[in-house]
Amino acid sequence: MHPLVLTVHSLIRWFIILLGAVAAVRGIAGWLGGKPWFPGDDRAGALFVIGLDIQLLLGLLLYFVVSPVTTMAFGNMGTAMGNGAIRFFLVEHLILMVAGIALAHVGRALGRRATDSAAKHRRSAIFFTLALVLILLGTPWPGPAWGRPLIPGL
Image 1: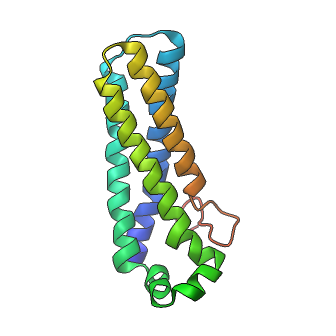
Image 2: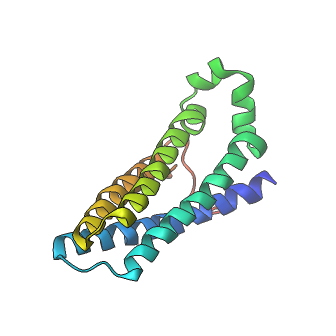
């Protein structure tokens, strides 16, 4: 089960990054361009947040149930924290992703509550951009000891 969940989780990251970029760019373009708030702007934020929630569920399934990395790490936290690759998934990846998801949710809520288009775009732009930055920082890119391939299985 672990390889399947990990592969799906790894593939979905590309949709999350794309959705986050679209939501952030729509917010920035609307804010700086003085554009009205369109249903597509709201939809972009909604899809970003929904995608993040699905990704979070898969990540929690990996973290607490099926990942041999975290299962081993929970058995010996001292050794795990001394290993940069294991520590990345046990602590750093989790904190950055949860923070990114929280910022996206806050941005969506604040954007929807704003009363004018400029405020909606500004709030969305700021929070979705910050969320995307944290998500990109927490992604296990190829290269480091904890890195993952860009496309699973390759």
